[in-house]
Image (tube, rainbow, N blue to C red; front, side, top):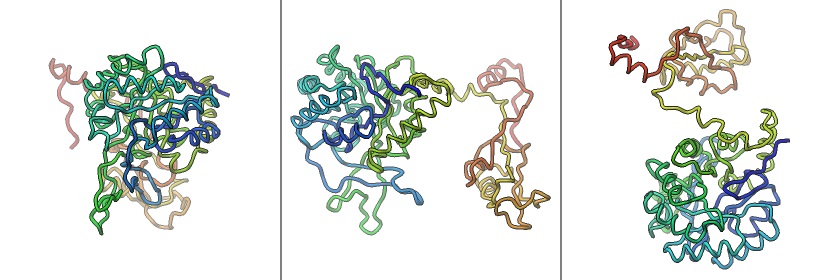
Length: 438
């Protein structure tokens, strides 16, 4: 069995699965239940001065029969006193010395940052996470995403924190996705001496509007507010930002990945793109702490199947497979191929290609293909014109049957040739422009 233990900037954990700062990590009681269930670490719900919250607080985006593909919240940081939170961190660490407990912090002045860093150290916390990401409420007071969106300000505040923390406790800088280029904020964290970064925090959002009251949710006495969006729907955005920071030569900091992680496969993807630990919040709010059992077992089985002895061997495996578009091979060709033994005859691939893509599928007589699983006698079946197929993937994406439409590589016999090379040859007059499709 592969070793799942990790070490992120000096913060050790028996596995990479951490509870992200949020409602599931708001009390010592919850942290102990999380550790009992198998989580390797907890990032405490952000601690600051006592906060007054509103009611109600959450809204969700459902799609079809799937509930909560996205979750929006206007909840602020922990409304429990710093004294209570630090006391409970102390008690949890005494009972669980080998699990990671990270204090998430958000305060305003240099003196307050120094004070809260020292209180985190005194509590026995394994690390500190700086909340520079919340896009609601606190940013109106010059904190949260208001800091994360301004790299120079973030750099200054990380510097304040490191004055008190350097050499005493690791500092993770949590980044906001509500910014044009997240690597600028990550570089600022690095310049100021931060030990690691975590991303992404929630995305500014409105999930739904009540068409009777004309007030978006969550509803607060006839009004609402922009909230922080998270859950499975944000995973692609998070993966992109994690990879961007992981490959940036000026960042090169350990990463804790966050954003829509719900199962072992999600976790493995984040780790392959450079994460050391992965943080989970929405999936726990939806399904409870026990989901970590399947996540740990699934990741362990996957690592074994690949021959990895440690989860650390997976880290970063996919970082460098992403490249600029101008460096991709223009002569590579991939086309769709239908397995008629699996085709159910819904012909959704034809409709999608005909109306939404490149008109490369015909409906033809079965011509001896048999009925397959559910196809009606005499009903036309889809047939791909591979010579015209551009390899857009749409038919395979809309097909409701797994592995029914496969994308296969066609040998073109032509050498690697990128857009960058094409532009160079054109400029030198070494070739004529490639003609467009008729």
